[in-house]
Image (cartoon, rainbow, N blue to C red; front, side, top):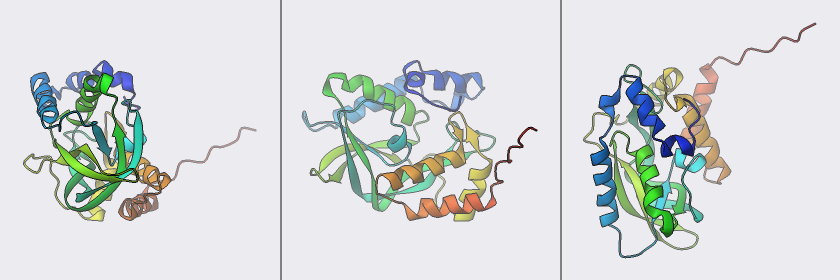
Length: 229
């Protein structure tokens, strides 16, 4: 399974595939998943709209429904490859790396406002995707947008988990990217699609673009097709 679609989350196919691969022990339980979602909702301020802040694949493949979308910036956190991926973009045998928010600096991305009438269902899909191993901490953050500040849920790295990679060099990141792949596909594709999506939004990330260039410089070019005579 490499192209993830909404139905895969609705039918819980990702977690089923992880169990079938013999790695079910990595998954957070249904009860803990529900508990985490309820805790986040309990921290909502009154009936304020619920926004989700996307800074990685949620920009180019959100998979959930929203009623408004804004370019946004969060202060106090920055984006980086701080999370070892044992499922989505890697495996326990060959972990990949995915983006996470860590403290300090700022980060640009996209904020999505969820429809109140289907709020619980959409959040359940997001949790099934982002909290599959409970490696993130869902946190309410203040997000700046052209339409004014909003309060949004952002998925911040959980430094207490063994999946926290810490600060890696560009060379280490590229080495991982070139070999790792998981249930969502190759790790390098995740990097490329995120860098491209940020550029399309007018929010280029120079570090991600540098990593893409480093990978392109060492990744074998596709074999040229030979025309039949």
